[in-house]
Length: 163
Image (cartoon, rainbow, N blue to C red; front, side, top):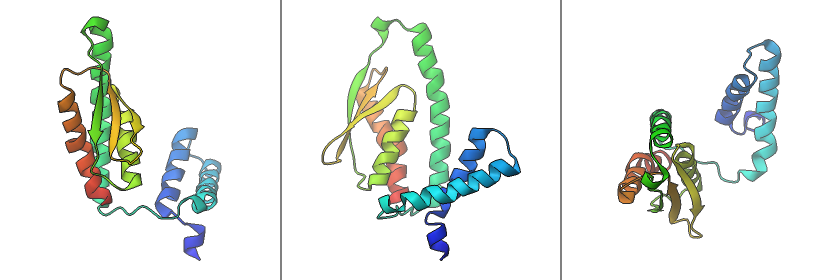
């Protein structure tokens, strides 16, 4: 019975927190509306979740989130310096192919989202067989180093979390 009301309890809790952050006011009315939406949304979307993602190491997920937040902050500073102080001629944009060891669709989605959320990089395409990501990098002199950093910093951790 409880599983039918809360098919994804972590998502429900996360949605309540996100709702309160979006409305920017904590009140009884906002909390009640957030709980109602947080129960309805997972319930309505349940048919689209045939297989629940398995998080093997939840503490690693917390570590991953903190690393991504730090990288986003650092990348914002780097991109600001590139935009403010580098001429277009000195900016070296590159397309980088990142081979994937991940097989979980959720992990691949997290990796693509992380790359896109980090300023200066964007995931442009996933290959048809889900074995490669095409990433655009705003500025780098060493595309191989960027690829290796994505694999070691993000993909390795996601593999530990999901597989």
